[in-house]
Length: 194
Image (cartoon, rainbow, N blue to C red; front, side, top):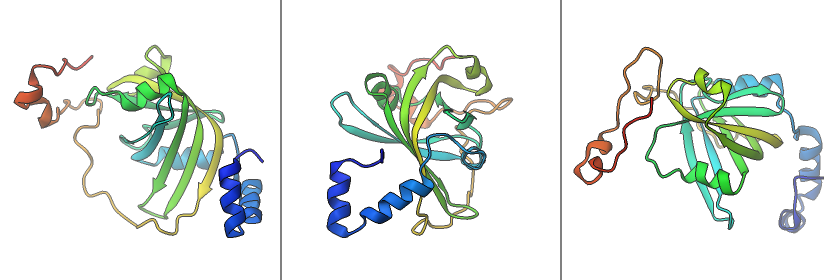
């Protein structure tokens, strides 16, 4: 079994769930994306990305875009764009020093569903795929190690009321967030990259 470490095992034993955990890994765990995983990920407008510093300090961020912005392009490769943001580069900076990542995909609209992807990532600025992501300034390539569905029972059913006007779209003028023109930031916000 590759998914569990000593801390997991101690709690599984304390709560009597070791056999259940082993069965879940045996039946649901995989290290390559399935066509169903690919379709599910492509249908979503967002996911959550967990990264950590070189010292192991965690960080979690929201990544969003139009459906299809996160793409499975091979059974062992998922990509997503990095769009112009606040310039802190917390997630991407962490990936450069510690490539281990966790992605959590949650479907809340039709049928609640969750998919967890743990693996390694790399940030690339020169990639042939970059041009296929409108407004992307870099691309993150994720190689999965652990892919598994997660129980959806506490996921609420939600619907999209309005799409974000800030998501880059072909043929649509870019909208800058208001905070970039606030006096306290205006002199340090760099121009948007082409």
